[in-house]
Image (cartoon, rainbow, N blue to C red; front, side, top):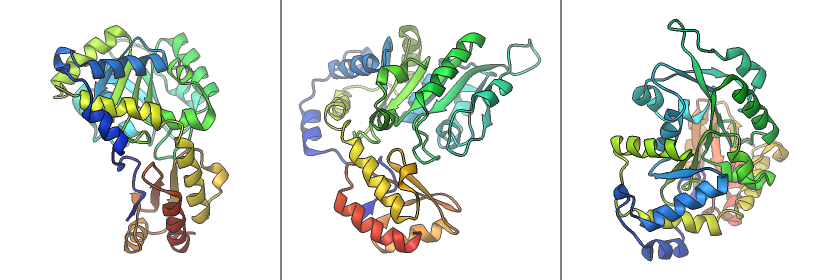
Length: 332
């Protein structure tokens, strides 16, 4: 089967498995795992943050990052299809007691004029106060679109003016970096708190990190434990992330090229595909998913009339060519 359902389905490469087997480990709850410490320091430095914290999942990293900026009864503003609202099972409301409002942008972009009009300052004990803006780069359900750096910098400048925080869900920020050449530190500079993932395009079997100030990360460490995320000899997993950062980052350009080939087979303009995600409109998404499976191609439905394809390091050019033949008949 050619699995295009997600870039989370990758398996560790033999070289990654060797790195995991040879990792030096310690008890991370005691903050004594040297490989975890190395990963945290490396990623914090890549994005220009004071500190980082390793988490088992991206959802946990996002919850911890948002919690650093938004308190119970306060609100975060984000785009309507943001992962933190649509794909994390209501965790931010259920666990943090926060509220949210959304703007709608077809390609998942930041609409700063609308955000400014939605912003609610502190007006005393009568109205919910906006304390953070959350953006997603790349934007998953909008088709892996990249948020332009200039737009993010404009958000940063305005947020500083009014005193609100900026959260970046950077689960696939690596794809944005490779697609545009934007330095990771420039992406980090627009955020007060950030989450990045190792188990999507980079191909590690597990793991994300939350980034922020040293003080915020100390608080996040306590929250992580409270949520059941305290881990022991987890350097065997952190080693996979370190390996991925060295060996799997630049190759994301190959995934982007493969996605454009699939988009063209599906009748889309490949020039509109910025990274590794293709979202296709079809009258009956479940039927297309079932038909593709019958022909050896796994894809996912992200709505009654939308299917999603993702390329990744376990999908070869030959796989892409075969999937393109199947999908061109079904949706092209």
